[in-house]
Length: 76
Image 1 (cartoon, rainbow, N blue to C red):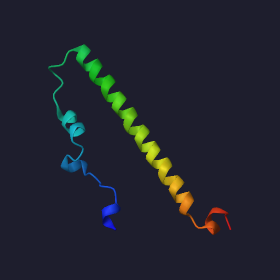
Image 2: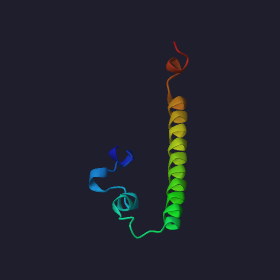
Image 3: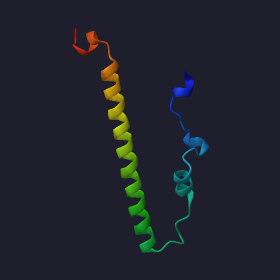
Image 4: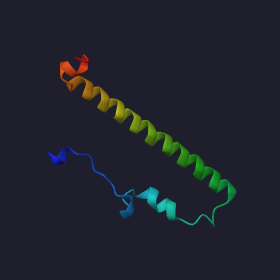
């Protein structure tokens, strides 16, 4: 049963891979253009992650509604 639970990553243990590496990287060597490009890439990645999160939440709500006993879904 525990095999079905989603994995949780602990930010204190650097469990977010590339994102945690980027957070600690010195930005001193980057030009203004490099920084602008990096911001654009990060914003695109944030949008992608948010869209995935929203799809997952909608999927979960649909599943919960489908499997909810009828007495709960009618408000009785």
